[in-house]
Length: 122
Image (tube, rainbow, N blue to C red; front, side):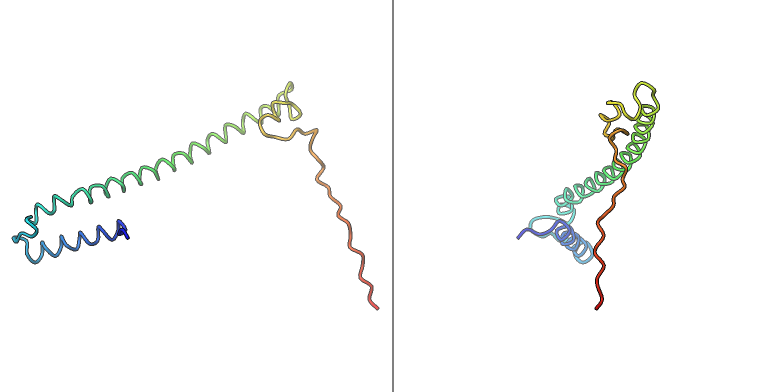
């Protein structure tokens, strides 16, 4: 089973710290400490790049949220203008095409449910 990226970086960092602290001048597996450090550098560089991209994604989502709020406000201004236009109004096809229900097609909203018969107490 492959190891998680977090586990990999923790393990490599542990090897780096131990080697640097206890035997910095000794070579292992045909590599000096500096050579090993260069060999594992892409793992750390890629993580740094991923962090930067994730931060850019968060910033872009925040910008989208602000832009969407402004867009919805502008769209509502247009809809309100259509409602107030004497040639279009709330009964016009443009108003309906914008996703709204024409005033003439709205129901009153009044609903009278059936009452349950009263329970007899004997």
